[in-house]
Each structure stands twice: as C-alpha cells, then as structure tokens.
Amino acid sequence: MTSTSFPEATCPVPRIPNGKIVSPRAAYSHKDTIAFECEPGYLLRGHRVLQCQLNSTWEPPVPACEQGKCPGSALSALLFPV
Image 1 (spheres, helix red, strand yellow):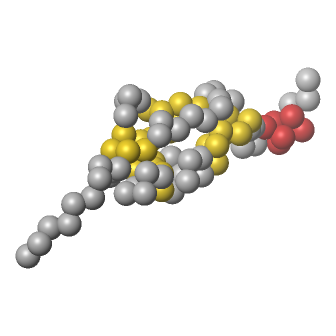
Image 2 (tube, helix red, strand yellow; image 1 turned 90 degrees about the vertical axis):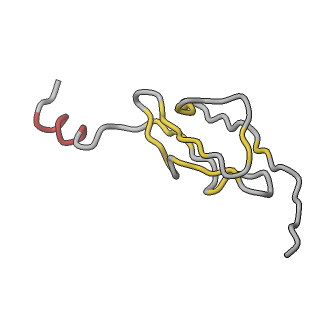
C-alpha cells in the first residue's frame, strides 16, 4: 500500500463585519473547525460552524452577521405603543 502525500492545507482567517470567531487562532489547517457569533443586535445568516478543507477553503461558506430585530418586536410595538 502506498501513501500519497499532499501539501498541508491552510485556510485564511475569515473576518465578518459585526461578528467574531469564538476562540480564534492565528492559523488554521485541514479539518480545523471554527465557530462564529455575532455582536448584539445582529443575526447570523449561514452556518455557525465551518471546517477547513484540503483546497484551503471553508465549508460551508463563511456566514454573515446582519442587523436584526428580536422576534415579536413588531407585535410589542402594536401592543405597547410608545
């Protein structure tokens, strides 16, 4: 049985506006995982956990943090107008 050697894959450190990596590191290699969270007032759109692939990309794709509202806030405004 022969072993095929591949160069070590490294993935770039992803950055998302209004969000951050939970427990960030300086570098990421194949099969490393990262988790994202958004700043208060923002909602995560996409997957929270990503894994570094052999082709030096993250799968699933890097998420985004979008400004959001708490569910029910429109209803609260109707029930309790200011």
